[in-house]
Length: 491
Image 1: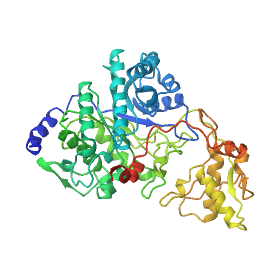
Image 2: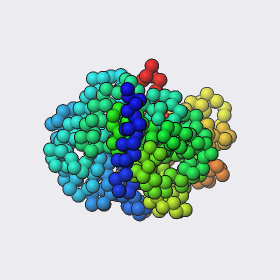
Image 3: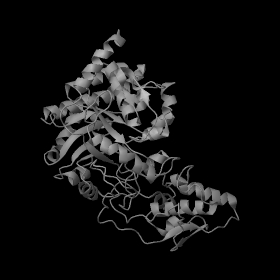
Image 4: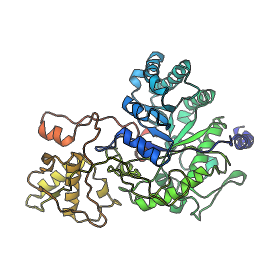
């Protein structure tokens, strides 16, 4: 019965797709990094580059203050759901932020971390998370902000049944359909969007697509679908796969926002700045053209570039290198964030101060090999060694350089504190740059706004009783990590 109704619904989704507005290109910014820009610098950087929308992985007041009056549309994230379990908790959250709503353009609030994946088999927990969504939107409606601020969830490809070969075959997993269908009805009632986070580099492998399928206008692979639809790039392929899945849950009019899309620049076999530049060179003009997709021609697709800066404390290695910018505020590659396709570097951040030009390196003492390996493991456990992983920018260096890179990353992570270059007699500080043509040894920026962050070296090595370091919890889960964990959730 359902299959007979799809052609009519297909026509409906085409007819309602265009609404006469332009697509938005926004940028995501997270703070899961040992060194990071302060919020006011981020606001300035976004404005310099013509970005008018931003998604952040928090709802902290320091960030709201920085964005106040900037004219940048803001998407917030709430993950501490324990204090939002009922209407009163959500009402308190809304009332506490209303002063900022008056001077900021908050557009959306994202709730939780992919609840239809991580909570799919824990139905009571999933219900509690959905209740937060309901109560948060109700609290905003009651405070007369519901016309502007919409509450929703983020979604990922792990929610779809695997192994489809064309978008029309896509549908949501049976385990989540009842709860998701009810949630979609609520989103429709409140004119809230369905938000999809994409990882194109992974989708190419997941659906066995031609590597050139990553780049708009470059692939020779053509995927033909029903009703004459033709797909030549992964962005359209995944977008329409979700639209088809929504159609099959009787939500053909649902607005779909791409809440995250990007390309890694390190720590991954095909992750480098030149490929990231090429990816966005095709994608962003396509988005700004309002061309739409085969299933929704002419529909504007609000799309958020992931991400503004690297986040070297995220759990999955290649998710640490999705930034347009390094931590020193310098861009890695050319990208026109206005969507005009200009061959330009984005402007650099202002007011950034680098630390002195000095590095911590291995002294080449291999007398005790066990100790060397032990110190290497310690350094990489407490810093970011993803550039040394297979496919990373430093994976081909000799082992001495490998050790020096790890030691230096630990040293820089801890703001060049000399105690963080004490690897049991195996290291020393130098002013001679140990970088190679392909492997850059970074110098980090001076300590900025490091709220709730205590360097691991200083807490563990200076305080033997310390059991670990505390930092602001990550509010965005790696989608690549989701793909690795997926069998444990659905088997």
